[in-house]
Image 1: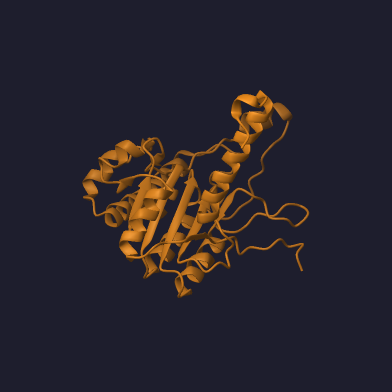
Image 2: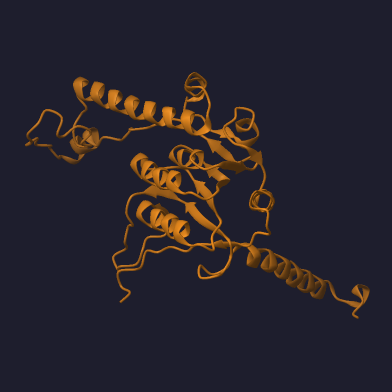
Length: 277
């Protein structure tokens, strides 16, 4: 056996680095195997901006970094139909996104007849939390950005810039509100009133869903629905999450729930590049 005292500093660093890589690799292998593995718990990532359909680059490749509804719903159904899979974990790291996308995924989560768990990593706010609220149990770290109950419909108009650039907007449309929120025109008072009303209506649906999913009085959710980010350590006090913890705690919870050892496998994306044949 080599003795540490006889090794150069550079050799010690290399040995320690290799050891760390081996430990991390072993941990990752337990939680992240190929989608065709025979494990009994599926992990479905919900990472990035929530959008309804994939965005493609000019070369036909998929733009990375999005949580795509049609892809996630397909994975949920696949995991639901797989007899080997006894539970589904949703690994969430998202600042939210399209509200309709969240609702579509949430409906699919509610249809699952197996135990479902959400683990919020760094962020799981806004519409991403809507999805988490539909699962049977939510885990988050104390410092995770866990909750942000609010809806935005804000945008930037180009009116002043267009004037500077010598551009003129010509409105040719049918319907009083057809060009509402067109960035090349000023928002009229009637349009602003309608936009606020619609945003408020969507927010009320969001709030109602959270209250129902988490079994919390509607009035309580309304008082905290101010759009601010609530950390995990505060969210648990409000009943917005169930446990503070990481993957190991999820593993423990599912082992107890299923009354068997769990082996977790991440489900990979079902979406293919357009360039693939």
